[in-house]
Length: 220
Ligand SMILES: Nc1ncnc2c1ncn2[C@@H]1O[C@H](COP(=O)(O)OP(=O)(O)O)[C@@H](O)[C@H]1O
Ligand SMILES: Nc1ncnc2c1ncn2[C@H]1C[C@H](O)[C@@H](COP(=O)(O)O)O1
Image 1: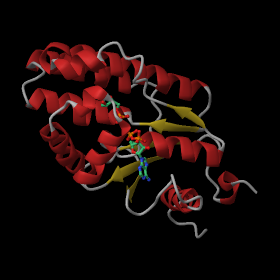
Image 2 (image 1 turned 90 degrees about the horizontal axis):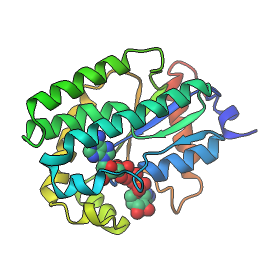
Image 3 (image 1 turned 30 degrees about the vertical axis):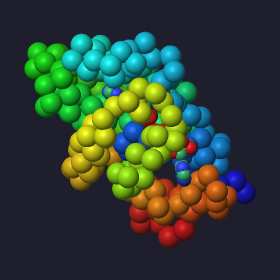
């Protein structure tokens, strides 16, 4: 019996992975999709026309980048909806507005007018039939030092050049954000509790916890 059937994860489920940059979302996305036989929905970092420019000049490019990410994520939402679910999604659309756009607005690297334009567009797009809320949002958390080590180890140049204070600010905001997040059920995982790269059994125990989050009253 495959793990999806064993743990009664719905075939049409949408599981989204949230957490700060470098925490391990893509690694988790690949691993869960393989174990459950699900499709993946990744952020397109390599072909993003604004990301390098944004890291070099937040003020100039933050609005352009947010609009780009919003369009890309909305297209992915539509794709998942049209294919009938069965997806692991690398980062949720909620983080674009709740973390990134808000942080740049609060810090003054996105103007108030741009932020208002962005949030009204976001609200209009999210309130459509194309926007299925995920069955579960897996929130990955860990110590800032471990996460910064992972960012360094992964080696994207633009992120390595970014001051540590940026990642520190984001790390704090993520904690506040998840504590008030209510759009769908949440499973919190600390990155020290599992090791998907070196422990083959780890994915099954995560799937078991996903099942408990989706069906909280059923004993598995
Ligand atoms: N369990 C783990 N132990 C050690 N390193 C990990 C683990 N999971 C992910 N990594 C590494 O951390 C870095 C960031 O992971 P990634 O999945 O790309 O994060 P994200 O998608 O959240 O930005 C990558 O170099 C990845 O190989
Ligand atoms: N909405 C966003 N605004 C600014 N930057 C963003 C947004 N979404 C993703 N990013 C950046 C952060 C990272 O540099 C890359 C990819 O994120 P990752 O967490 O490594 O998957 O894009």
